[in-house]
Length: 463
Image (cartoon, rainbow, N blue to C red):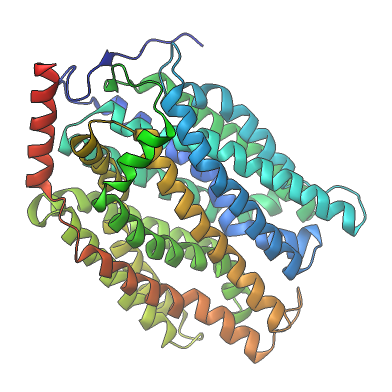
């Protein structure tokens, strides 16, 4: 594939001040659309696939999800160092989208394939394919995330990239995967769910590859720090150690991500066994996605008026209150459950739309404090901690199912139903409220960020 956008080697803070084009913003957003087709299949359907289709126990599936996420998380810092120390004619971050994406698609298909093996053979196969899928996801998605800070230093463009990325992510994992998967599994498999999941994964692998290759083609690295292509581990650690805003955001995001992941992994059980309307799973996930897509575009203008931090807090509070309201609502009141779910995801969209913009701002803060620009290090630690969170959030439903005597495709006990309800509603409410606390000490506002960028440009000019 010919490369039309070679990286511009500049001192950070220097380079072109041109604003991003709409094509670049859309191209960047499509990257998370493609990534989250893979992520959405894993988060929303893999546990159910393992227990009810693939044929392993809930306890074994939960252990697998935990082990795979921990292995995946441990790879993030390593991948961060690789992106800091290696550059190519395609740049620091973009080549991973070009070469890693097809392999990621193949592993998605293999993960949702059911081999004709005994129980132990299936378990080994599941470990091999899902851990490999997580490794390739890191190889592709971590450089993709770091790419934003190399594309622009303009605050509005940063916010726009975060909005487009968030929009793409929710369209990928919620609207596309969430709404289409139940129908595609039935239609493509013609009643055979084993074949249905495999062919659905094939389709998603093709769509995800096209989307991420479009990102590679249209996005350009403008801010690659000259002379810092091979950072040492000590330099990266120093950047992180002196980056208070980054660690406050990470504490916030740990709770925020746990709230979303815990709900995603149990939604299929909640609609199947608690509400007893499995046919409404697709519409429920689509409702949440559409609602968040309504909220995401409003995050940028609201952030201009009241600031990113305050917008994020407002979204978290709305999410927590609506989750609590769902817990207090009867399963029979389906319309009311849907209403609380929708309003909660509108609020979720306000926060989600700014998540990566806030992380990107800490790259300049770290450079301002230490003189070292470490996008890969920042994003690798962020992804490392978030994946540890997803590991806990992913195994929680499996533990509950195992402890409460869950039996696939059967009427569940009252204790199992209550456990599923807690993870779907009350736990996200508690996590949402806890995510607000670290933001009370967050001081990297728009005024300080503007001053930081101006200082970095002065340093670049003096150098």
